[in-house]
Image 1 (cartoon, protein in one colour):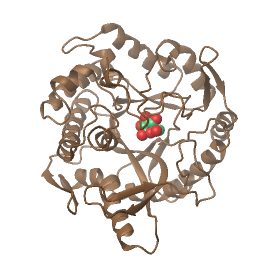
Image 2 (cartoon, helix red, strand yellow; image 1 turned 180 degrees about the vertical axis):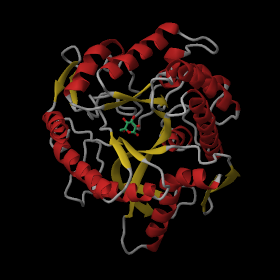
Image 3 (tube, helix red, strand yellow; image 1 turned 90 degrees about the vertical axis):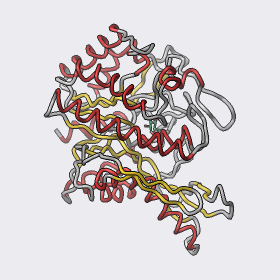
Image 4 (cartoon, helix red, strand yellow; image 1 turned 45 degrees about the vertical axis):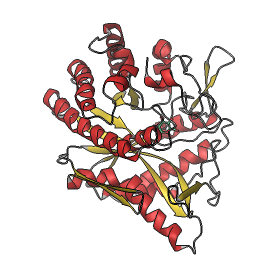
Length: 396
Ligand code: BGC
């Protein structure tokens, strides 16, 4: 069982959405891969669930690993390149009990798990993501307490990020030792921050600090071998970390623009909100769609000199009102970026089908395919999905 299942998600209104087998992809994957193929895509990003592979410490479930292996082989048969993520927010409950991320031994425990996968499939995987949004995970787990373990402790937050980055670096070496040709990266979330009040210098100061922390901290850590962040009166963390540039690409997860307002509250000086000022709409989750922001993010990541994959970009839009325009605007940013020489190597839309959404369960609908929960979880291609498949077929 994952720590997530054990504790449940943490939602503001106290509801803890359960997986409930989510969309049953674990059982229906052969059909789901046909749906994938019908979209004309040539790559697919997915993750392996650690708790399935190691249900208890030291034990490996061979049937789970076998299934993952069959999935990879099938993707390759369909000529779809698998991009494999090793940690996407969840880990076994026993892991959190024995070696939580804020403790140094987490690195060893994670690498033992990573080793099992790498030994088995590294010969067939050319694109690895070690961690999905490590900072988002740590902020939610130790910052605003929405993900398990649901604590509020900045020291632990930074220790966890630090350990995840050490685990990344070790896993990087592990993968390279088995498959030197593989590319190994991290999928990082980026947000465009904007001052809520254009005239307020403190709001602008917040934008500067939040951008430095949220968007740049990890990029710079790989360049400087140092994790460093200072927020007046709140945080002062600086520690050497021997990452030695061990990253082959940056994965960009990009969704929205966020407004910041400074509050006169010592321990809680930031208020965040969305505003609909672009003409691109607001998603079902209230997020401001802002495709121009992707341009800014790509330019920021370009400064690292690393290739870029857009590993997530999508919209919660149950009625499919905005998704097609969302796709078209973001994809034209990608095309423009490539023309300008920004090394964007791939685009993965989030998501193939409506997914279990962490804090919302079934309510946020990100899929190119809708999932009908009232009809045996039937998958239905949305118009925007049809548009996307068409867009791809015209380009190949
Ligand atoms: C996560 C996804 C999630 C998406 C939309 C990203 O932060 O990696 O798992 O579904 O955002 O909330």
